[in-house]
Image 1 (spheres, helix red, strand yellow):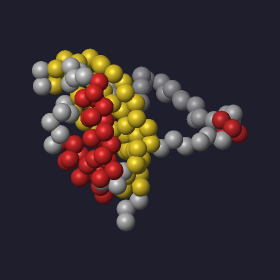
Image 2 (tube, rainbow, N blue to C red; image 1 turned 135 degrees about the horizontal axis):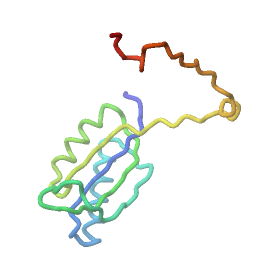
Image 3 (cartoon, rainbow, N blue to C red; image 1 turned 180 degrees about the vertical axis):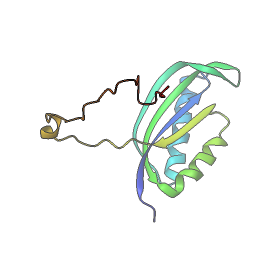
Length: 130
């Protein structure tokens, strides 16, 4: 059994569809996640957004952001299943960044950094001697 890991998914849909169709698409993504052993942690609807480049002749798209947990071995299969969904213009799934807690005492410590020395005749670390 592979360990559970947190992932983030971004899904772009055509903007012209009705709210009923959007809810159906959200349900289908949720169902697909569960089918592959995933568990939703957070879901956000970012609404209609302009796209950086046209996707299937769409200059805008409706964007859904998803945080979820899943076994590492199942993510590849999830990606394949989502690629087959014709309603999704574009999808991306990446590992969620690991956020480490910073101790209060280490936050206030002064960091000693070595002082840079300037050598005569050099303008920088990669300057060549003439």
